[in-house]
Length: 389
Image (cartoon, rainbow, N blue to C red; front, side, top):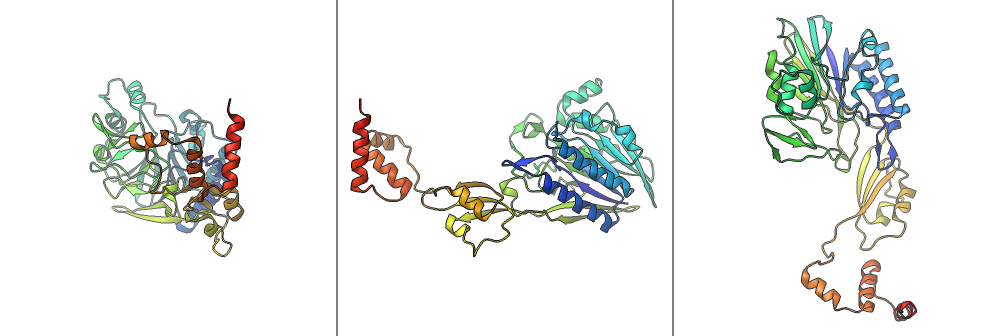
């Protein structure tokens, strides 16, 4: 059986005011190409399918088209909700969709949902664990020893029956996993707080679950994870984050995005990362504005651009100039300079001893890179006189 592992689509997401849905639809079409090229039997969507609990209608239609295309190919879908999704909305018509091979677990209701697939080697149990919080598991399993996020996930997984002989098992989940005591490496579109908090580590506001939990009840041939946007393993080669398929932050610029192809044999699990090429790349450019926008140096003008200017002084209408060269320029800032203001007590005292004219002259020189002319100094003095009580 061949399974394609995706996660963190975040359909409907906006980045710096730019609607990413056109790029996301393009990417879903490329995924369908991979499904056809590789002969994929099932696609796992490991949470954060949408970017918000109330996604825009266009995002819902994009997912609808994608699921219909997969169902029309006879490809099973294994999907769970993430912390960005509305679990109740994803569960809508879930039983009806399951008859078409689209298996969705939105809410945790007391037991991990299992979708059973078959191939030439027999049965494959696909276990679907949506994003859960400790309070949710305590409510559904009041007798379980749930003390924190880690034990909550352990209690949820304990609802699975013991593995049957000869039956292979995979897990699709949207959790923060601590692998061999190490935090996963985040992308810039997540927040990581690397401080210990009780029994676990925090990533954002969510505690981490120990990867060792995935060995209980006989374990899994593969664990398809979502939640962290940078592709990586979590403590073992078969426990893996697919990562977000598009770049959503500055530190992801230039990153190679991918989907994970799992080829499950009778007694083997081969894992391969297949590259995903976006409609528009996201690039970080650094340099003087004139150099970055020089027509002779502009390439791939349709890409999303994050620019860091190294000009000595702020440039007038810099974003407008940048967007004339790169229409999809997203963000602009200036490189930090080593000769910035000195905010020590001594410097503050020196500033207080300066006259208005001296302070304005210093400010003008810093902003424009030159001193006031005599005529400009006289004009400032006259303006001060006019404004004096």
